[in-house]
Image 1 (cartoon, rainbow, N blue to C red):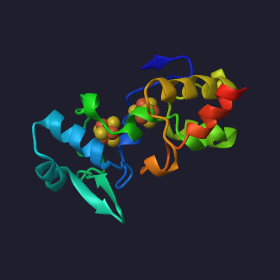
Image 2 (image 1 turned 30 degrees about the vertical axis):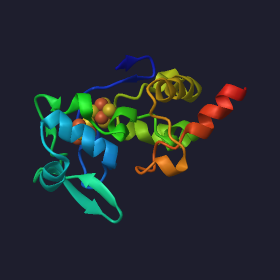
Image 3 (image 1 turned 120 degrees about the vertical axis):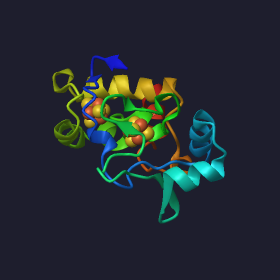
Image 4 (image 1 turned 60 degrees about the horizontal axis):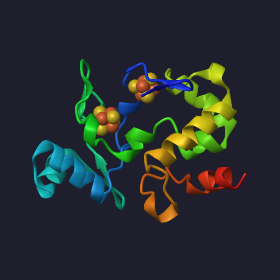
Length: 155
Ligand code: SF4
Ligand code: SF4
């Protein structure tokens, strides 16, 4: 996805770090189907528990087990919603300071666009793609932006 407020540089930074990628039950089913596995086998091979959540495993290099340095995400068509939504997480949409700090982490965020434009494009993206969730739907804790979308619709 290339848009004026975000242009992924494929650096892989967001695919690094253990426990960061939550995979809900529907997302596990989607990934298992993509890989031609049953869900139990997928969970055994590629996930691990983190509290009450299930997260994708990391390799010894600290990157997501599905990250390839040459190909980037090897499960792109089926990747979890949290991967589809970045950088349009609630914190970055609701708070300009978070958005500024996120630019140090993610070189794909286009600072020149300004936060207001980031929010406008980001909310449209998460709504159009069905990624905007309400509280109970959001296992990852980053996609609870339905209320922000609602505010936009009302304004
Ligand atoms: S950190 Fe940003 S620029 Fe790097 S791969 Fe992730 S989304 Fe793309
Ligand atoms: S599923 Fe793909 S996009 Fe998500 S962290 Fe793993 S390699 Fe990165």
